[in-house]
Image (cartoon, rainbow, N blue to C red):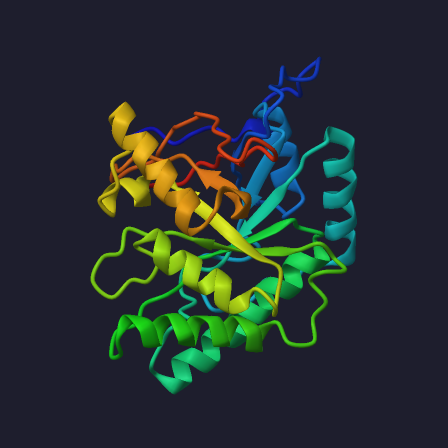
Length: 268
């Protein structure tokens, strides 16, 4: 499969891309500097975007420089790129029952929050974790407590940063495979940090919810509203259950107010 060409290596557009009234974006590479993600998003015709603030599969943190943060903010303002979401490192497991791994995860997640604050991100997207070695309820309690511990002393409200709990496919010991589980984490953290949900279509489908038929989609959305609540769904990820890169560009807005961010992931 041929590798995609970096859009920054192509001539800059002579006129602004045509945009929709909805906020639609993709997960954008930060290669060459985190600020480059904003330029890539704009050139790809997006008005919102998501990034990793460090390597998604390594513990080593990425040190952001003040010039990088300033340039990111300048480009976002210039191109009206909002909201910006950051997806948490995949290694982080705040439901871990292993003390050392849990400690490492809490430290890494706090680093994610600090970088999100430095970049003035709107959302920080987190998988709720894996409860292997415990039961599901204990895992949900552990994740909620770990998020509260990791954010202690950081003013997310003042900086307008919201943590988004992403639903998952619910495989094996994975938390977040049902809307009820996502809703429980939100409820536990309601008075601790700004908290909301991110709904991934691939994960929703694989978890067993019908989003294929019209009747099933209506039922699934009704169930989502009854549990998580549309008002708490601030971001959506439109992906398909395929083993390779997804290229879904469907824009959705189920809240009727704030449109959802639609991102692109390599698989689901």
